[in-house]
Image 1 (cartoon, rainbow over the protein chains, first blue to last red):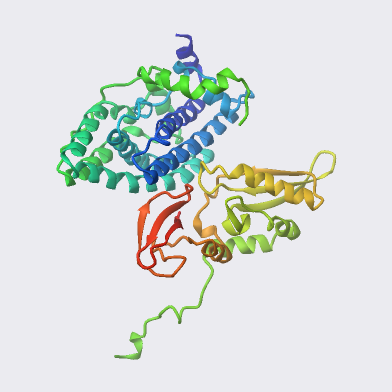
Image 2 (image 1 turned 90 degrees about the vertical axis):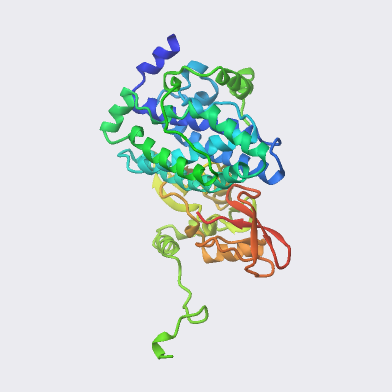
Length: 258
Length: 184
């Protein structure tokens, strides 16, 4: 319980920035797992490049977080030396990469979300946040341009590929609601004009996704909050395993540099 | 047909600088340390030989200040192309090295995120250099001409190429596979 206590003691802005950094880092790691495992070379490179965009985004947020914290910790300390319960990413980002259909449906879901979210983040009163959002939104627009045709290609492809898309939609649907949840501390930042109100984005997200999936004759329901916990450091069983892998080098060889 | 119906074609349009690049150019021209900018023109992108940091739009500013003991301190301000661009470290080191070699010892590099880099910051010379490297330069409408034979009949093979800033295309006329520097 100690780690959860640590999170609750954090100042809202630091907590907010760190949470956004964790979202990007965990997703980046899941995408990077496709490196050398992609279905073909170009796709392998594409997924690795999307992973690179997200790791860049994570670094920008972590660097800002270290400035806010001002305790001499570095971005690497935050990424590699915090425990599972100290990570506050929303759960959808940490789910295992699954098959290619799962990865692309998750990517499509978060791409639609970040296209809406970063647009709002650009209006923040915090200029550092605005700078990061301005950098990231261009990349995220491009990601969506790439994930959309994949969803259609698989959903309208063979019986097998369509089934895999349908399976992925079922597996992911319960993790979507958390994207639109506003905990009290985030609401506080929202009232101060720093954080966007996530709850306002659910309707546009539902509309966009439902309309797009309808092209492939897939009916998609309205989002309902079913699973939550990421922002409180309570994760699926998968994050711990991921961190073992991701943090191994820095834990085994402390202060090691590339 | 009346005279009013004359439409401008490529030959009639006077080539103009992109406003973003024009602003960059006048900013550089107004700088008090023009010779430092010139020294930094030796520094190229590590993966795009011949394309300088200035031409690429990565070099944003060169600032002169005095530290506590009144020594001259140079700050080179750069902005990354893509947020995860791994070339930033190499570019920073190369910029410091170039100024050190010219006799300036107190040099540091600051990486800024704002204004966010865009392909509009690439100079006309930079676009020429890209073509010389068989890379199609960014185009506002993503209309990609083959950098080898000039044909406009091209198709996208992959939305990401060898680096995050490029996409992979194939020319349907000469069959050449080439990189396109994505419009951002």
